Length: 382
View 1 (tube, rainbow, N blue to C red):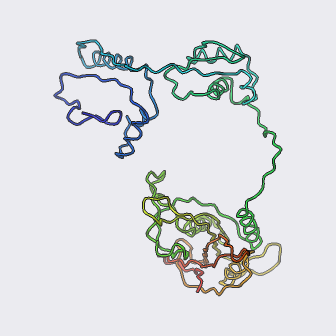
View 2: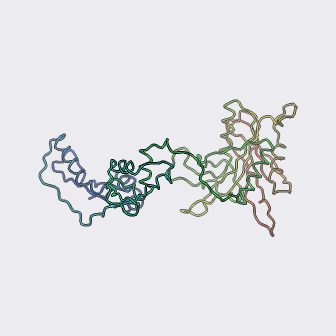
View 3: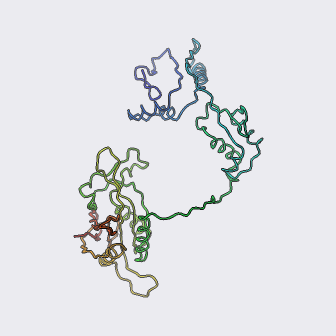
């Protein structure tokens, strides 16, 4: 007849030929509705409502209002009274509140009488007090209230969030960077010293298979992880390379008249190794350089960014890589490069341990293949 709390049945739906209607008003278990909807892949308006919880005591009121509207607007006639089946009523929920917790959590000084006034006006019923703790019975329609902090939030909301002071909580502990964070900071400083600015792009992009991937992901160009519920339809895939985001940043700079651009990005790229499992994550770094090569605070004539600039940066900036690399270049045609020379590079950025010494992993510079009439160059290890 129907899927409870998810969707009604085709044979029992109302049509233009319907003359008799049976009104069902029910409360459905949120966990059961959520589980069934996910298993069947049915995300409906009803499931979204019931899986978040509903007012169990509002069932009869909702049914009565529905009947009133049918009789008033459609000329219906109510024939029988409601049949109420409620074998195991839910026990009332009672939440304790210590008045001093309002000040401890929000810095607001609210008198006890004002706290009682606010909560009573919102439908909470004071049912007793013991040991400086006030007990409030939660109305059935407030599914979101479960603990003391929820009552404090209600008091703060009606007192005024704008009255809450802002200050850092006291702490006697000092933070420290993880080993990988220290390496990333060193890498960022080195790249900044070479005149590169850091770009931060979204991890979600369009499906992209124009670029050869780093060695650990090679052969998976068409295996980008796809999102089941993307926020943006055009960005429904998790990136397997950093280069598309950098080239979009480059295009954005070109569109605003900035032709001399050096950008880098340190971020995670994703790949599918096992179907129906979470994607693998790899920390990577990528560079892009175009336009004129300039050194700040030094008088010099402008010169175009050459392949050697990208080569020199690539082999020098990882502070953990003392060995030089043989790097070659091949032509690429990045979109919207407007005829400027562009040099994208990408390689793994995660260190490995070899015989007790920390060494940088083998760098394999990603070769970029694009389909545009603009000319540029990409850097690839050979």
